Image 1 (cartoon, helix red, strand yellow):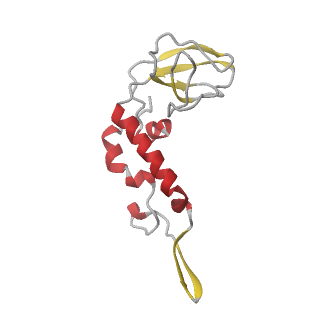
Image 2 (spheres, helix red, strand yellow; image 1 turned 30 degrees about the vertical axis):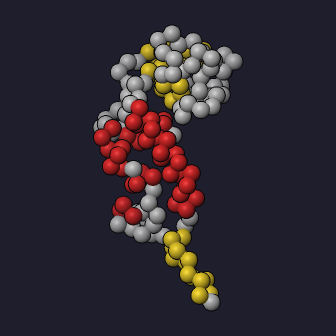
Image 3 (spheres, one colour; image 1 turned 90 degrees about the vertical axis):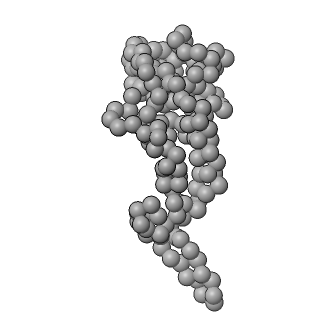
Length: 157
């Protein structure tokens, strides 16, 4: 979710880039410029683009809770060390919890059901509540005011 949020706000919280040729072997790679627990963004890989967390014992996925399962490859690309603020990472966790609780309801094409002798459904309108429609809110609209301070314009790097 963290990588998806960074893309959404156009901010990967980077101030350095390390272009080069990188090899991932047995799901691991050597990155001496990262510190334990630091997140990083891989760009230019055919199989592994995304956000990960660096640990000497093994690279974790972008939410720092499971092995990343990197695909073995050699690629010419860029590694971007990230300096993600703790409150932004916490917000990613809140959004993940919101999606787990309400995601199925948001995906439903129906807004309401009225059962009085017969079934009656109301089709959700396009555009969502944030756009003046009547459909269920999305995580983007629910958390927009809290994500906006992190938003950047321009390039994603």
